[in-house]
Amino acid sequence: FYNNSMTPVIKPLYNILWATALAAVGLNADAKELLSNNGTKAILMAFAGFFAATFTFFIGLYII
Image (cartoon, rainbow, N blue to C red; front, side):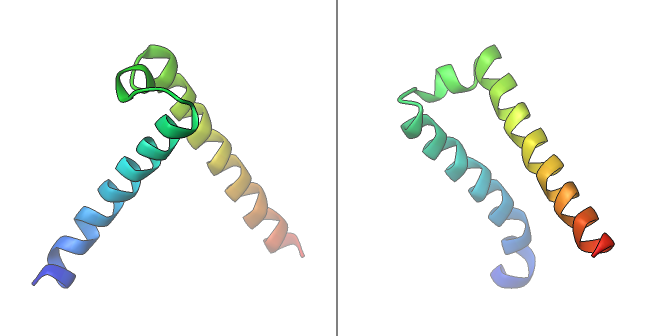
């Protein structure tokens, strides 16, 4: 039951929480600061950069 039903739901949530915790440690900030207005903008920009890099990679892979 767990592997088939719960893993697809819990795994992405776990990854986001883990990434937030690592970012808080790396930035020497607490979660309250990280989830503030500036922290939210930083997380959104990090996601945008990741998706832009992934998109560029796949476009380059398609061209080659």
